[in-house]
Length: 432
Ligand code: LLP
Image 1 (tube, rainbow, N blue to C red):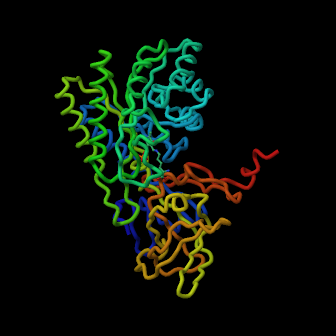
Image 2 (tube, rainbow, N blue to C red; image 1 turned 90 degrees about the horizontal axis):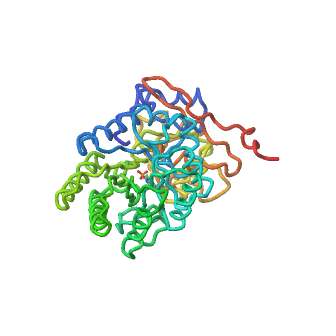
Image 3 (cartoon, rainbow, N blue to C red; image 1 turned 180 degrees about the horizontal axis):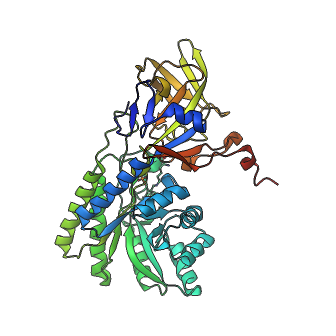
């Protein structure tokens, strides 16, 4: 099992999260069930906040990338922790505002924001709108003019860094749908247009090089490339941009062999690189933002399922079926992502069999894990999948008209529902 301080095995041999017996959670709230350890989430938020104090003398802020796990309760937690928020759609923005999140601490992303989303962001007073492309730059300037608002903007730059991660989640290289390319001169052209745009106030440059990255070097390189670009901007335009946003992407542990680094080490190394560039170019230190998503919520979450059919196909494989699947966790189907699976009511037992954990959707690819070690189990046992706090609930669907599970938060030895379980009635709510 992964060596997480919020997970343990109690005297009955049951897996616990935040000190709460998972079998009790399953009895009380039903399965499938997402469970999030709020104390773990808050401790990581505080670590990032402290790291900003230490590395940047407080001149900066972590923004939680809400795409990892977005609901009103999560926005409230992030707000209480004094952080900012990265949203990527009108829906995420709406959720944040409904939760009382201050608009000025929100940065709005998206590679193809609709005119409605842009005007919603302008009218709500979102702190930064991160512009992705030339069409958007022109549209936003016009819209801001019509609405008589000066809009704070950022430009998303592709720094050309090739981080070693799954190719679907690599976004910093030139062949990417996100942002302005440096190599082609497009980024400099966008900077000049934004500086001269009547209704835009260019505050920030932004980059994001990918997700689930375990190496320090790509982040250091990206920071250096962005600082070099800021120097080039100063040389060509005389403008010193005051802010730099370095995106998210720190890797977490899904399985024991995942070599995740302490998140502070990314902060330290990157801040050193920024400090050196400031000296080299005689810059005042820009205000730094980062946008961690997965590293804040990923390890804090687990999913609980009830095991149903166990199908042994001699000399081939054993399928252990669960009462959820790709509808609540599409990450294996999409990326063949690794996960640690445990029979939560026999968590003290050795993992003696190799099984394939299958979901209940009408689809052969609906698997949660292939060939994974697992404790012996039978129908009625409880299966826990670890590190499901990020990109699980937020990527869930209603395929096969399966209702989405509830999300339960564990805090201080108590539990509460953060998101209610969907009902069949919810499924037909919009049907006419
Ligand atoms: N900022 C930007 C602009 C991003 O595009 C992302 C993630 C983040 C921040 C947060 O990155 P994180 O710290 O969570 O790595 N669905 C995929 C992950 C897609 C990530 C997209 N962008 C998955 O399940 O692995």
